[in-house]
Image (cartoon, rainbow, N blue to C red; front, side):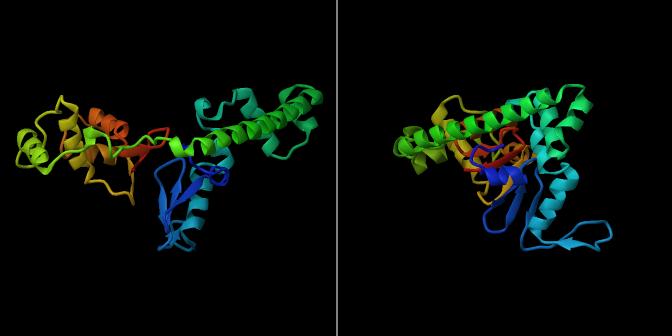
Length: 242
């Protein structure tokens, strides 16, 4: 899950990209606000993009709460016990019933509620501290992207033509990945012309585009991320051009 999402987007389970596109946070599903979408096989119910996305989250991911709760532990930081309590708290049942279901005392249930409130308070303080650091260092922050002043990414037309002639066949297929970084970057920059910033890509789509020029799509995909040409979600399922 991307780090620049708002709390509201995370709670809903989707975000809006540009003027028209709604993107699911848990899969590659998107809906375009310029179209309407059927919600059932008989097409008797239609919805605009956001309504279709809400329906998708509910029926494909069991709702935004369950989808969020079922993320990997390295993303949520939650133990199985904590997930169990959060699931029960979300059902709006009283502490006595929860205690009976888990065969524990009601005081133990109340203690877990208190611990979650403490975690919420601590998370707010941590968020405030981190945002303060980001705001302070904003002017000096160097993004993980290609820096124009970096000589590795600066080349003349003559240099590019020489690299193309040496490493590409008549169909634009590379015979190898250049060992020298500058030559490698020239080819990767040419490959990047096949991506558009308005589109989000699955890993399969990325591999197919890379394969148009390189056989080793795994290595080139890593370079595309490393050189700041592509961004991707934490789970590696969605990519976009930076």
